[in-house]
Image (cartoon, rainbow, N blue to C red; front, side, top):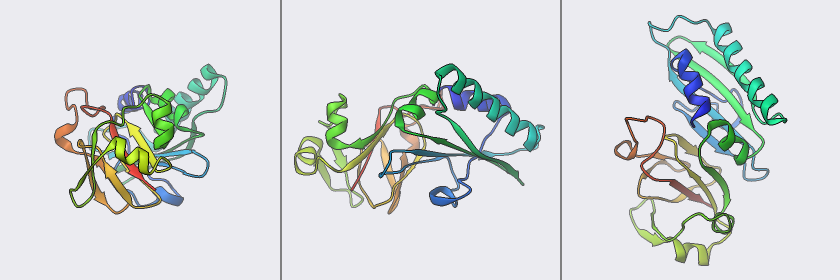
Length: 206
C-alpha cells in the first residue's frame, strides 16, 4: 500500500476493524477477499498514542476526502469508507473495494486475488516452493497442475490475510498464524520502507 497508508500516516497511526462481517474481531491490519464476488475489505489497525492530537471527526474527514479525491480522479467509486473510529488507544478504519484491482490502484501496490490458474494467466510466478502449516513443502508447478482452482492472494504489504477456508500453503516469507489467517513474517518485512515484504507474498486456500 503506497498511497493509502502513506496518506493515513500523515494523521499518524491508523487501525481498522470491519464493523461487521469477517473483520469484526481482527486486532491488526487485515485484508479479506470475498471468494464469491472478489470484493476486498480492509481493516487498518494501529495505535492511537498520547502524541496523536486529531479527533475522530478530523480523522474521518481526512479519510473520506482522500477516498473521494481518488474516486473522482479514477472516474469511478472504487474506494468506500465503511467506518472510522477512535476507541481508547485504538484507531479503526474500514475500507472496501469492488475488486483486487481497485485495492491495488488505491494503495499503489501489487495485489492479486483469484485462482492459481488466474494468477498464472496474469504472469505471476508459481514456480517456487510453498509451505503447509505442518512445514511440509510443495512445488508451485505441482500445486498448479493438481489444483488450478485453489484461491490465492498475492501481495507486497506486511498485512494479515483472512480467508474463508483453511490456509493450505504460503510462500516462504509468510507464516500461518491461525487456521484462516497468515501474515508476512517480521524478518521478511522491509523495515526501512515499512510497507512491503522482501518479495511478493502468497497465501493459498481452497
